Structures are given as C-alpha cells and as structure tokens.
Amino acid sequence: MRINNISTKFYGANRGVRFPLLIGMVVTAIMLHTNAFAQLDPIGQYNRYLTESWAGEYYRVGQYKVKGNPMFLGQAFLGTVKTKTVVDSKMQNLLYDLQLQLVGPGVNGKIYETTDRVTAFELYRPHPYGGDTLRFVDGADYGLTKESQYLNLLCDAPGIQLLRAYKIKVVPDPTNLMDKDLRVFEIYFDTYLFLKTSKELVKVKNSKKDYSKALAGYKNFDVLTGSLNTNFSDPNSVCLMLSQLVLN
Image (cartoon, rainbow, N blue to C red; front, side, top):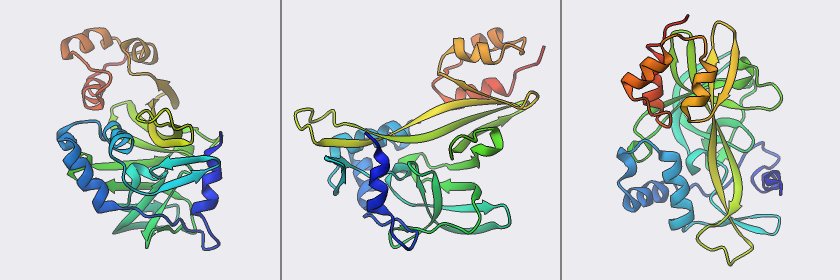
C-alpha cells in the first residue's frame, strides 16, 4: 500500500496542504489522556492518542479510512526556518509533513513552500509534547541523497552527533482489528550517529551492541557505558555518554 495516494487530498494548485489540524483538541486530549508531558516519549504518546482517543476526521487512502494526518505530531508548531539564501529568525507557525518531508509556514491549514529548499529549521514544542526545542538539519548534508529526509539533531558532542529521522506509515488500527478498512497514521524514527572525523553516517538500533560496533574507535566505551549505566533507548542518556567518549 502506498500512502503517497493521500497527497492528492492534501495538495492543490496553490502548493499548499489543507486539513483540519484540531490543535487545541489534540493538545488537550493528550493532557487529559495521560500525564505524559513529563515523560520523554512524545512520539509514542501521540501514537497511542491516535489509536485510543482520536475523535477527528478520517482520511481516505485508497480503500482505507485513516486516523490522524501525516504532519509531525499532527499539528503546527511555532518555529523558525533557514534556507540557502535566507535565515528567517521570525517566529511563525510551521507544519512539517513527514510523508513528503516538506516544511513551511502553516496558514489556514496550508503548508506554503519557500522558493529555496529549507536547509534547517527549529520547532518549539509545548509541554504536552516535551516543552523543548527541536533542531532539524537537511539529511542531504549528511549523505542521505536517495530521498528527501530531515534529521533531528539530538546532540552535538565532540566528534559525534546523534540524530533521528522521523517518518510516518499507515498501519492497521490495533483497537479495531475487525474493521478491515480502518487504519491509523503511525510516526516512527530511525536513529543515526554521525562520525565527524570519517564523515560517516551510521544507522544504529537502541542497543549497546549496535553502538559498540559504530563506536569501535573509542577506547573507553565499555567502561563509560557501565559507569554511567547508559540507557540506549534514552537520547539524554546516550548524549551524556557521547560527550565523554575518548578516541583511541
């Protein structure tokens, strides 16, 4: 199944996207659904909200009715954008389409593309989603040239960067498997390490084994991860470890 079919519903001749964002409803529903605004997993929390508490419109993707929309966390966020020719420090409502890897100002439910490709942007998330700032860079600058992809820069340690590539897919609704026509958008991500010395982008899983293989050139990896009790599923824990690594 190709979720690209849905783009014909969102896009028109004005190069924009139109859909009901339901921003207030989404934020309020997540706050009522759980106290997860203090947790570290807004992606998982948002996915659970879609499957368990979604009360918005369905989108038709082929034969399927789909909960949610392909935007990052389903809505617009205040943020700033940068292009090759312009650094726009003006705060504005931005939409980030995970399916099309398109970001731009959101006005009246539309995404407006800039003349130049956005090379970096920041999104400021309210407390229900983490209460933090997310910085995104262009994956093409890291060697991801086969397809358009922005990368969330989680931390920039000496010699190493930790990044995430957010994506979206359409999956069966686990709360109603009897309805074969019902689907839900699900956000997921891939994790990468960028090794500055070799200019190598390495995809890793959230396991010590994967990180150990990618960071084989660092002599204190085993001792450090043991002393810090590194949780490889927690980017804050991983970033702390990365900041203290020493090359062989």
